[in-house]
Length: 97
Image (tube, rainbow, N blue to C red; front, side, top):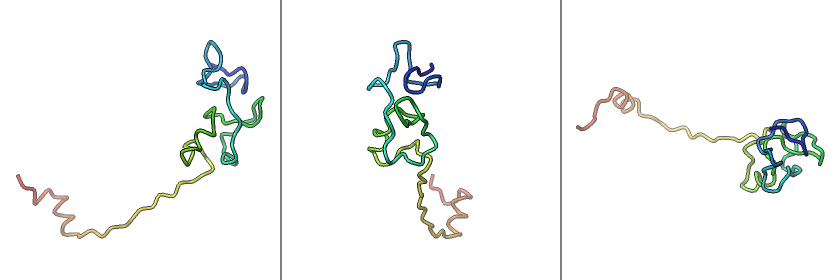
């Protein structure tokens, strides 16, 4: 349904027949960690997130999973593989039955 309070006219998953179904009854303004995110929109109460109504709750666990401005660096560890053992494993040889 469409929001009629904070972001009038936009689709909102928290808006129902009885109004806003979110626990606090309305979206909350963004926190400092949200600055630079592409999901920030201007609402009637100020700058809000268009993906989640309570940005402060998303940042309490560390990193907001909706954040578009923060890149997560995944560390991979390169391991040495014995080519002889790898070829045996790939061919299915050496299995005990």
